[in-house]
Amino acid sequence: MITHIVFFKLKDRSRGSFEKARDVLLGMKGRIPQLRHLEVGLDVLHSQRSYDIALVTKFDSMEELEAYQKHPVHIEVAKYMTSVRKYAVAVDYESE
Image (cartoon, rainbow, N blue to C red; front, side, top):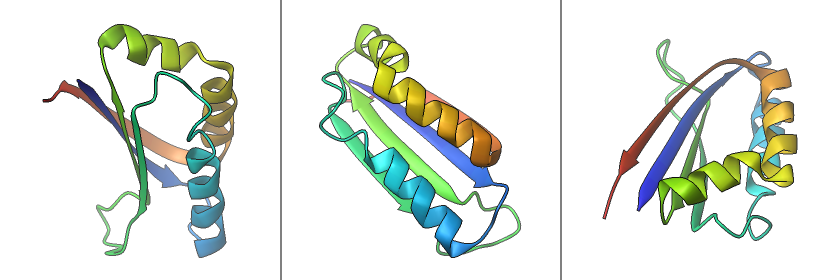
């Protein structure tokens, strides 16, 4: 299994902005066949080094992750997140 994690720091640091971004990310659930797990968390610590949103997704293989990246639903979500984010970092790893 491949786990794909993305952390986002948003331009607008308001609660409403965080919730809207969370809802957009959660909107992928059930709409992308390759997506085996989807979890979105909003930061509760709000420290200087914290990111605002964590996206955790899981896929059966690297090929499934690549198909997800190209899926029209993901492309639209990525466009939105690019427009509202200040920074994003990602980690992809194999898990059991």
